Length: 364
Image (cartoon, rainbow, N blue to C red; front, side, top):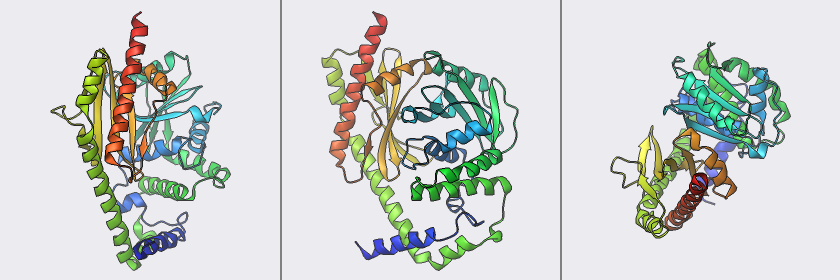
């Protein structure tokens, strides 16, 4: 273990000793100058709403959502719950968070700063269509800093009420929670409260004092963070370069599949692009009228894939893909770029095969 790593570990340990729950100092999002970015809040919420993620807080957020909105729903079969962000609607809009469970579908529109101008009729129709095949009940929520009067079946959940319920429930979950993610979560709640209440940093300078006393160590930590991110961006560039679109197209031609594969950028030859500062690879798969997006990005110092359908009416194919083992892939930094590219090629060919078979079944 290097001396730098020992120093950073001690820094994190010392930071953990701060009274995070009681402090009024800067949150991590405030330090990052992103305390009120709606997509950031939605991404963090989706992580903690998913009961199967590594935070080990189970159904804390889902339970708190339903309790605060007085929705009587049983949270069963948590392992089957899927949480998606930026879910495309029929009209090409995007619902911030969609939760798919065995006994309900939940759609959440997150409003942090902007007014409620969204096409809720389109959102509602999309959510209802997701649930139509299995005839599941749907719940539609506008989560906002201030009270709203949403339409088309949406109900309003105000952040202050939501957080009050979370804090009342969290005690039953902390014994099992991952300490690191619990710390991040409490910090996120404080960020929301600070944003809602517009609290002043001068109320408590504990965190700022900590950073001032440890400025060299903090800068070293940030230096390694930036280096790691830079290396991951290089990996993404290499993976996109190594990813053999020609090989896949030849395989499709060999199997006589009526399909196409394109990069998501303007020239359609590469999948590498940047969206709101996020580094991504994105490809578009088309089989007949079925269009699927396949994306890889950097998350939690790992590379992760995800996929979704361009049109909500094709979402049932997603269940078929899952049943055939097509799940999110996660790659560690040390895995070779060549092997990652090959694994993506393998999974994409599987997706083509499965969607082609399902399409043929549907037309027979």
